[in-house]
Image 1 (tube, rainbow, N blue to C red):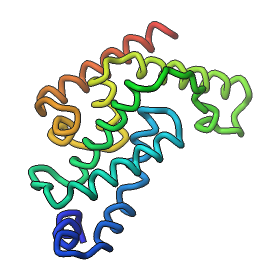
Image 2 (image 1 turned 135 degrees about the horizontal axis):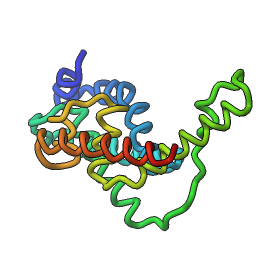
Image 3 (image 1 turned 30 degrees about the vertical axis):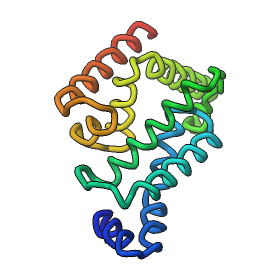
Image 4 (image 1 turned 180 degrees about the vertical axis):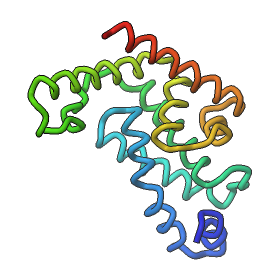
Length: 176
């Protein structure tokens, strides 16, 4: 069953349909939130909050967008609220996990440093550009869906993505 069928089944009273939606979207949603808040426990909490709000709002969900787009918008708003309330805390990124331990130590160190510079460069992007980049690359959403999640138009989302990649290229070139 696709999401639309599961939403219809839930509206008819099938509680298992919502469980299927959670099972399908929990991991990717939590990963998206983790890229934003950079704290695994907070990402899980925000994911649960988003699903709770979706559960409560699903009877009124108008299906103007896909369930996934609607859920991601709920989650993004919850993350934004949390980030506004929270004090900034530096949490070191575990870039080493992406580095192959079989590589020579010098190459591993170079790769870890490059990944850390990349993470910082992404973090420095304006919010809309950063979110657009993350949703496009990691979630593989199209520009129309991204626009519905972060606000704006599909052409605006495309422009945000283009500007984000351009800015990252420039920053990373200057760091070599």
